[in-house]
Every structure is written in C-alpha cells, then in structure tokens.
Image (cartoon, helix red, strand yellow):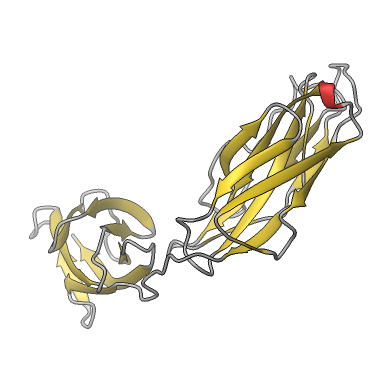
Length: 257
C-alpha cells in the first residue's frame, strides 16, 4: 500500500507478510523495488490482492485510474496529476495518495483528486513513474496502474559518471594481506574525478556497504578481524556526482592469518 515493509539482500527474496489482522475482503497493493550494486533500481508491476480472514468488512473496493497525464506523455512545468475514482461514492473516499518514482509525494482528500506536480527542477528528458492509491473510509485501498512520463525542462545534467580509481590496494596485482601483520586493519584509499564534482564515495566489502567519505582522498579503514582467511574478498567503491551519476571500481584481496 505504498509503505516500505522490509528489505532482503539474499536470494530468494522473501517478505513474510502477516495478514491476520487485516479485514476480510480488503484489497492491498504490493510492489518491489530492486537495487543493483551500481545504484540503479527498477520497480516491479503493482499487484493487488484480496484478504481472506475472519475480520468481516465491506468487500467493495474503489477503482483508481490516472486520467492525466497519459502514459508515455511528455510533461513540463506545473503538471496537474489527476486521479479518477469509480465504483464508490465520492463522499466515501478518505484520501488519494500520489506516488512519484515509488515515493509518497502528495495526498488529496477532496474531489477532484489533483496533485499539482512541479517538474521544473527535474532533468530534461528524465523518465518518471506515477501511480495513485485510493483509500476509502473503511480503510480499503487500491492502486491505479503505473503511468510513465518524460519531463521537458531547462535543467540539464552532467551525463558522465565519476571516474573512480582505487589507489590502495592496487587492483592490478594479486593482493595478499596478512591479518596479523597488518594488525587486523587496512586503509582502503580511492580517488574519484568528475567535471561536476564528487558528492560522496561509498566503500563496500563483499557487496555490503561499510562506510563512506566526502573528502578526497577518499578513505575507509577496513577491520579485518571478522573476515575469513584463505579466500578472496572484494572491495567495491562507488562515487556519486551532483547529477546522480555513479562510477565504480573494484579490487580483490586474499586474506591470510
């Protein structure tokens, strides 16, 4: 229903959803957002499900549609996102929640259900998704289909990602580190360059975010004590520029006792 419930980083990706206290016949929406290690993400289709339980309620759910803008339309400036609600009396609607790119952006509580979306600050040519969730006064809700639009604006962005270089350990050689000789810690050093500047650099060990730095040279002190010896470990560094572009580099290290 547009509310973040959990995250899962291990396949198979599962969320154990407890529906015990939900009203029988109530409709709920489910969708997932998947993130890769470079920072890109994609949203699944929205699924609407009905609850079968001992909690009896009104099973008539509203029907929601986005009437404006149309799917694949180009929008600019102040755009009125209009949701239509059918299969229910207007005075039975409690609220209409509008989400842009999966983020709660506006709630309308009176008819007509309009979200004045200001796209002026969004990048020219950027794509965005919109959908609405309608709640009735009994607590039932349903989502509209997802509408994708393209923004036309005067905002231009730097299309190039930062160039990331791991200075230490050297990615070009087979690094073998002795935990005891290093005192169970080593400082990972990286450089990142971008014409628009670098806003943040993140350090991952074996795919898990461990730290970040905003000041060059970018460093992270890696605590080796809990890492297994005799196998390779991956150091992955991501750098972001003000336009949201992401550059990355990685190195491998074998740990020995």
